[in-house]
Every structure is written in C-alpha cells, then in structure tokens.
Length: 459
Image (cartoon, rainbow, N blue to C red; front, side, top):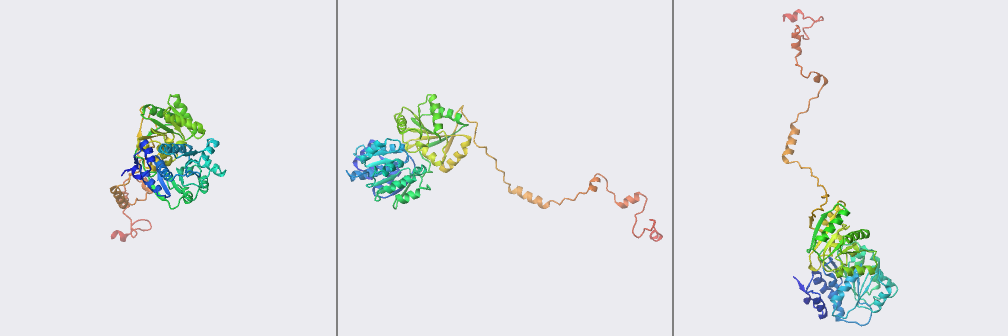
C-alpha cells in the first residue's frame, strides 16, 4: 500500500518543497523510516542505493528543526558520508526539499579551501554534511563544535569502513553530544566492521531492512556482452553509445589509467564524454559533474569513486567496461540507473578472464542476465566449454554386469605344452600302443623283459 507524504504530518514548508520536486508518494524506506525517526528512535537501516533514503533522514531532521527553531548554538545535525560527491548530492537534495524554509546547510570535505570551510562553520548551519577526515581536523583544532548535536547520521556506513574511515568515525562520535539521536544507513548490515560503530553510536536501535542488497532491482535490466579483450570492448562500447537511445550514461573502469585511456579513445571518436577519478582535484571534479548535469557531456567515465553518491537525473545506461571486483560493487555501480522509478539498463562487457567473476556476481545477487550480441562485433569467446558429465549406469546395465560376474567361469590355466598341441588330434595312450602292434601293458602282465607271462596270456 502506497503512503502519501500528506499522511506523515510534515510541516507545510516541507510539503511545498516535496510538491515542487514532484514527490507525492513515499518510497518504502521513507514510509518506514520517517515515522520512526520522528518518534526519536535510533535506527539501523539497510536500504539499497536509489531507494530514496536521503529524503528518509533529511525530512525528519528538517521537521524537528522547523517545529523547534533555535537561533543560538552550533550545528544541530551532522551527516557523515564517505565521498565528496555524495556530500554535494545530499546538500543539493537538502536545498531542494528546504527551498521554502530558512534552514541552512554546510558542506565540509577534503579538497576544498579550509578558509572557506572555517567561514561556513562560523555561521553555525543547522545541518552539516561532511566527510570524516576533514571534519576531524576541525574538531581537533576546536574550529568545529558538536556539543549541541541533536542528530548524527552515518550514510553509506559500509563504504566508509571499506575506505578506512573507522577510526575517524569513532573519534567523531566521541566528540559529539551523547544525548543525540543517531541513524545509520548501510547497503548491508552484515559488514564485519559495523559492530564497533553500532555499539558506540546507537542505543536500542530499531532495525529496518528495505530492498535487501541481494534483491534484484525491479527497474533495472541486466545485459551481458562477451568480449575478446580491451580493444574489442572499446569497439563494442562505441557501437552501443552510437546506437542505444539514452539521455546520460556512466561507464565504470577499475583503474584511473583505464578511465583516461577509454576517455581518450571515445573523444577521438567524437563522443561527448568526461572522465572522473580520484586524482582530480575538487575544482576539476566539480567542473566534470557540472558538464554532466548540464548535458554538455552525455557520458561519464568513472572509477568506483563515483559508484556511491552519484545522483544524476536521466542516467539510463550503466556500463561495466571492467567487471567490478565484487557483487556489492556491482550493485552500487548499477544503482546509478533505475532511480526514482525510472527504467535503466546495466551492461557488462565480459572477457574470458572475467567469466568466473561474472558467474559469482550473478549467483551472489541472484541476477537475471540477458546475453546479447552485436552484429559484426561478436566475440570469438563463447563462454566456458561445458564438459559432459559421465553417464550414470542404468539399473538394467548394472544388473547385467552383476549377473555376468556371477556366471563367468574361472579361466583354465594355460600351459606351454598345451599351446604346442593346438590343432593336433588327441589320441589315448592305449590306442597309440595298438597302432604300434603292442598290447596294452598292465602292472600284472609285465615281466622283466617286457613280454607277457603265461599266466597272464592264459587268463
């Protein structure tokens, strides 16, 4: 049953912001999380990317601040995220939802001017969106203050742990006000490093699981193209970009060098592409994302840096030029499409070396994958050769073998003399003696000379 935002008792200013963005019905994660968060509960939430979880934690925070405004004190809500891109996306989402309010938000991330960020902190915005490393620097120097904190949100918590932010997150928790409400969002709740975080962050948390990580996204179709290697993949991607109908596309590679090489190739083929990876400074990252948002480029080539937090309307195609290293990475990459109920397609180019990994991913995520070909660009690689299993013996054949084993007679021992007599007629000894003109001899009828005696003859 669909839940309308009007049923969640949100302030009029937020309802106007939702209507302005075209939101009328809450997603499942929003319908469950918003009422619980408004009741003041700590939450441990598992929700797939693209499920609407950003609004699920922003709306109850904004509702609290609108109902109980404060003009003094420091930051009231902190949202910790793993990447700069996700921080910017959440800030943009806040600005849209809060366009009819006077609430303020600030962004603190690495790669930006510290002087500018210190000025932001001095304004004491109600909501602060930050990456752990840069914020911890300001906390240690006393330039940031979390003693008035009412909400602490960890978004993409599993990703933060994978990026090595566990110690920074624990330190930030120690700096924050103990009497706070805490919300943790993660694509998976069985991450081995989450327990130390949840034990220090949450108090008697309510557990909410929506769109389990291994559940196939209903709005994303998964295609597979077999490829013979890098050069073949480039030609396949070029053909698909030229012939597929889409608004925007994201192509993922596993390395920075791979992203740049593919970008140079496609730009040489007059494709409107831009490249995003971890070695770009923040100003260049902002420029690249601006090109994609404005439509000046239609295709973004990125490393996994952009797999989480990239929320660009109109992304209808996601390409795995290099197959991701795990099922979770596949999930977060492909989650860039099929967002907010729109249909999307995830396309994987699979070389012989990647076949086993692709099979593991499809089993892990329980994916239904459609294998396709491009006329003129079919791979010579056809997938692994299926070995024939040895046929099992039937009951009839097994019975025959058992009967033969029982009835088979033991073989007679073969002697050399028998082999020499092969083909010769066997004649008894008595017959041989008669043919030689001698009577058969007996023990009683034999004398010393070998002649028969009288008694034996008479008898």
